[in-house]
Image (spheres, rainbow, N blue to C red):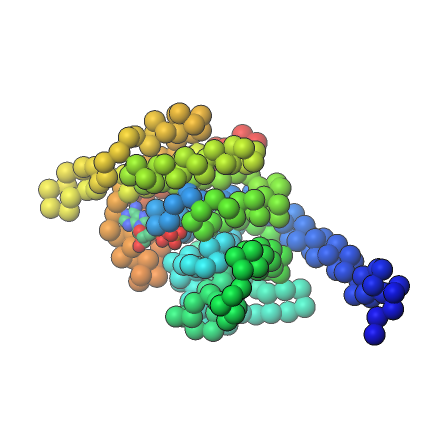
Length: 295
Ligand SMILES: Nc1ncnc2c1ncn2[C@@H]1O[C@H](COP(=O)(O)OP(=O)(O)OP(=O)(O)O)[C@@H](O)[C@H]1O
């Protein structure tokens, strides 16, 4: 049984020391990574993971050491895009867990790699009555562990593929106050622009730098007549960037090869860097690097 003195302190578990040591470990890991960049939107399905994987490929081809943290804990997909499957054997040692290594040596850590099988969902508990607050706390803890316990090593860039919604950015910013900034992604549809607009406003309020706005699935090139046309109705995304006072990083057309080749576990950018879409991705990475160099 605990004595009064145990209870008055921390019960003998050295909780304070444990927390301090975990914070120091996280800091030591993060200090070896030069630039941390989140790719986010607020809206789901607009191409965050596809953009993260292809921006990573472009940065790696430019000679940078790149890692990706899949912060989409409940719908992880970016590891698969990089060719790191769920059955990859993770190497664990006293210092932590070694990340998976995808195309072009891109390091990746994702919940997907920790699930028992490829079709296992992420279930935080079997308890049906678990509160949303409890689940959210579990998610924050998991995010911290993925960052802290992964042996990232020295990296030039850590890209963070954010989940839909704007709530996790608070978490990320607390874990890495030195975050270089966020790249916001939207498709041209009015509803997507409406949501991304809120995400940009939130980031400004939190004083999280916004590197710029990307318009994904901007146009569609007809494979038959080669004519380029709008895919969605809506106000120009460039105008939204201007209204928000943030840089417009560029527009990526709808290109069916992006999803086709992802499924075949090849990275689109490396296969098609000279295509219209490949060049558009290059322009976006130019914008990201310009922002980083200006800091
Ligand atoms: N420019 C594009 N052209 C064609 N298909 C695209 C393009 N961008 C993304 N896609 C496809 O759209 C689908 C959604 O993309 P993706 O998974 O990258 O979005 P997401 O924003 O990460 O989604 P979520 O966060 O909701 O999981 C995927 O099938 C992807 O291959």
